[in-house]
Length: 83
Image (cartoon, rainbow, N blue to C red):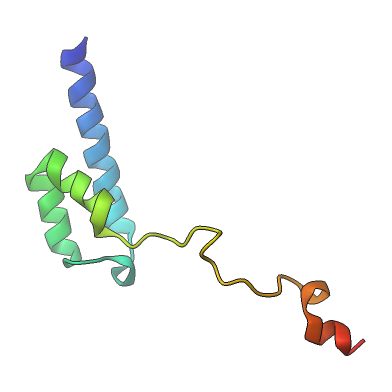
């Protein structure tokens, strides 16, 4: 059973990383150009895919890291002062 599950998990991670790398915009990539990342994922399957997932793309800011500001007119003090 493990002979089947482990290769399938590796294949799933590689396919996910490859599709994610291809769809990621150049501005969101880090450290290497897109073609180098794709070659790394394809030529070194588990290690290239894991490297892409860990360091290849910029992380989206979590809700706590997003700039805090008014979310709507009713939360904007300048707007409320003008009423």
